[in-house]
Length: 80
Image (tube, rainbow, N blue to C red; front, side):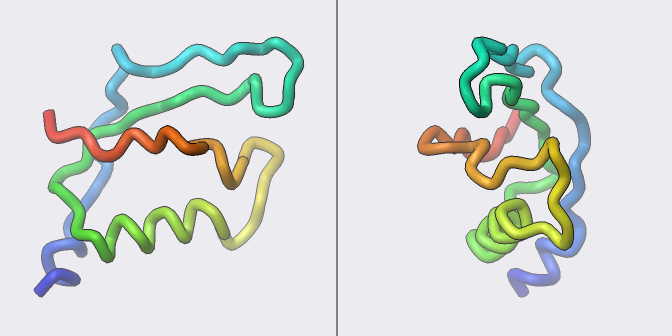
């Protein structure tokens, strides 16, 4: 049942008024910033775990990818 519910989850929109601003102070990671998005439904714990695993270990890395970009302050999911 959990998988069926999760199959339809999609990113609906970027929450533009909450997009972060990079520090750009020259320290590692200072060019990164938060880009929160609204999902079409609240994900299950399984969906959340799999999403985060895929984020940390994508099929290929790019210069723009950073495994720990959420750091200790993972914001969770928006319900608005």
